[in-house]
Length: 156
Image (cartoon, rainbow, N blue to C red; front, side, top):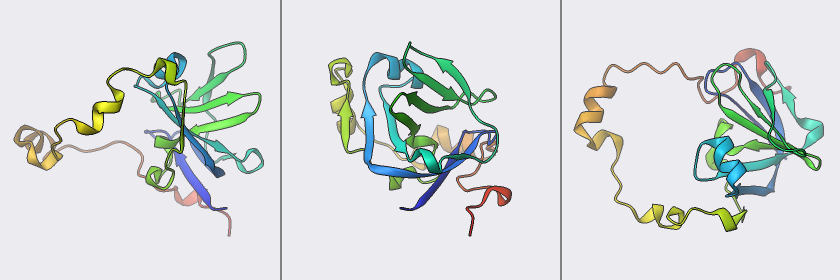
């Protein structure tokens, strides 16, 4: 197993863990749609004995009688889905989300009718959009970079 790191947009909450890549999924249920403010929630199970919060822990919201969801209290980034069977982390919160491809979909009865057609929509790269180029020219990102801070590097 390899160690993966990640965290929220502002960097206030950071984690390090081993994941179970066979348990990477997306969930279409309405609760996940609302929790992520998106069409679905991309999640991967953490190996519980390896999950370490290297900065602050997420704030919790009890979204049902069985599930808590963790998020950054400062920037609002959704981070965890915590149920009796373990903790899943938001794939997009990892420093390298491309390394964690979803393998299964859950809650498909609530899948929004247009989700399957998204890949077929016209696509434009950011730098091809003239208005975006002008807007981005002097934009300064305050988001945490996709890498561990020096003080949270994985143990040797």
